[in-house]
Picture 1 (cartoon, rainbow, N blue to C red):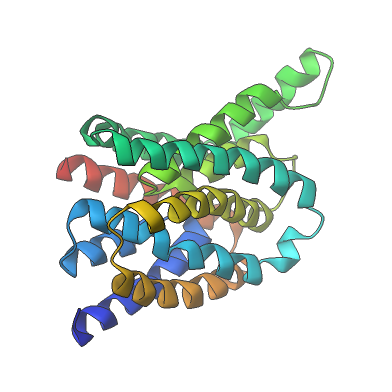
Picture 2 (picture 1 turned 120 degrees about the horizontal axis):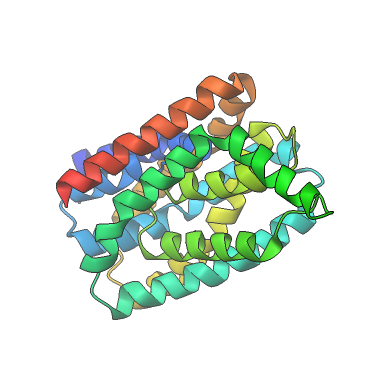
Length: 256
């Protein structure tokens, strides 16, 4: 891999770290950059997953303020997401990807729409819970959703953060600021990513030079991302995330 490709991947890594920590769209920049550097699709996919391990490290370091008091919640979500990530990695390594990839744009679009209509849906969930005599969220559907998003993250991962943010936005306590939900999302999706990355590191065609270049950039971008989220108004940011997700869904649909 030449100097030009390395510079491209470091730059894409910075953009991916920012996009991943802010909007859950790290692969919007990293995956196309790996393809542009000459990696075939499967190698680009697994190299992307390994490289974006640094995205989780960076966002955790940059989101310490938002993550205070979230330990029990993070543990539950991380276990479910990591389990899903392990299953997703196993699927990628053992099955053809064409059928699942055909569903990817629709999943991303669904997550984006859920983010746009978060507030009405959150009110509906809360009112149904009160009607049943409890303010608690239905835990089984939430757990299943987190597990499935983790599976998707381990298998392909593009915009898995958008899907996870949609799930967490609908189920978070009323009034929870978007930066807190976003920080929790980063750790939850990171758990699936790390699980899949460990598997790929041993049994998949990872391009380690590309992974290091991309990972260095992603570490820097993801460290800065939470600071930006902290300072931006919530509603425009949420709309921007959703529209970016819809744009990626349309792009992947046309590519398919």
